[in-house]
Length: 565
Ligand code: UDP
Ligand code: MN
Image 1: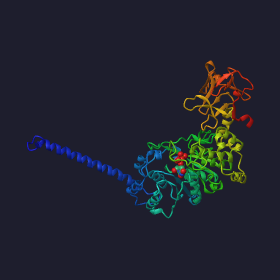
Image 2: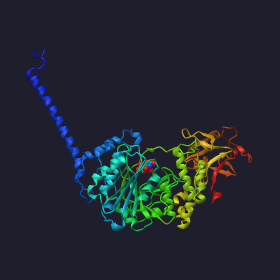
Image 3: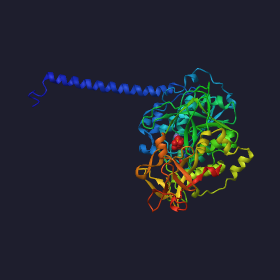
Image 4: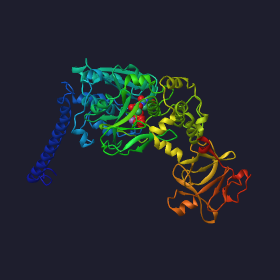
């Protein structure tokens, strides 16, 4: 067939050859462009010196090599896009997210010798590329004269060679300034949790200030200077940078909100609070905050140690920065958020780590819930004074969590440092929390005999359930409107044919009227119908004529505010 010349006539052959050559050329060109791009990333990286230092010998391949040993894991394991993180490079340009006003004024910096900063990063199962970006952004964007040391605590990560590999990589990377920057690497053979790992890091620190940073951050330009300026004014101040969110899926870097303060609710869960600008206050100015904006914070090392570090009775993760915030404020310190200082942080949607089961694990609680309740209970018992009842009212199951120590140490600190009572914090620092307390006339679980009124999460159906369900409904009786609300702001009401309803809490007069309740001893009397909430049979709830001694009509709140104050 070939010989017949029918398949490849000279002209057609020539055409095929040309097409083939063009394809080859395109491939070669693509390869050149790809190579060039990568070289640019690498050379951009190696040609730009570290802050004031001339750092040579950084190769594209070096960090590629380092991250190539990342153990294969699913994205679920990290809770962010690992593939993207691996392809982003060790440093990237970040958008400038801070206010224009931050860029147009010089910061008043303290003398470097008295303002050395020790950075403590504790990490557990962090992807190599992510950890490296955290460290490199820090080394690249921090003035060398202030960066005293970097303390990395590997909290029992499964990637067992990570720390050694990182040590080696950093030695090459920092060749020129190795004698000026302290590097401390520690590994907890057994996982200890964030709290004791951070304490371990801080106990090794020798700088004037200690900064706690997560292992999935990217510091932005000039992040340190605004913090140093504030800290130099008051040795008892602690500061948070403004955290810019990095999206866990796209890793895009966005602008954080400078109109929010850190706070918490009576369950001791972190919450953002609205910041109100005073007259003449500019949004970029540092502002007081009742709690830190997350776990990134900086303060004097001595002051941190004097306050007893992070409370070492707290386990694994959770509550530590709320506890530090309360004790700081009560014992003579202050907290500020500094919007001219920006640090990117990946806010993960779920925990990327497990909580180890407790030795006496409560079967109804997950290890994460039990750890959180354990830590919160310690905070409530050590700092909240009589207001701890509010915490227990909302988290009754916390009463059952065993604690293996007394609170003597904390009482000693409170006495020695003449710390204020918690009431002072509510009055002067966190009036929002106080307001929430004052708005209520009663709160917590609503008990009828040995069961509690519960609104099912999925369909809002009202039932009577065990008071020790971990998500048992917490009711709030609002003092002014008489509404009886769940945490999801659904209010108990009475509708057509005396049916008991659970609907969004109404703001207008008509709905409010149908959702208004009066207290008659332990009876709940519906204002519009003059009928009482009743549980005549095991699983029935209905409205019926009030009978003063009827046990089926007696509903007791876990906490009565009137009796409290
Ligand atoms: N971490 C740790 N040990 C643990 C749990 C967490 O060292 O047992 C580290 C984690 O790698 C991260 C920091 O503690 O650097 C804060 O944890 P995470 O980012 O999960 O907390 P979040 O930012 O969600 O508050
Ligand atoms: Mn984090």
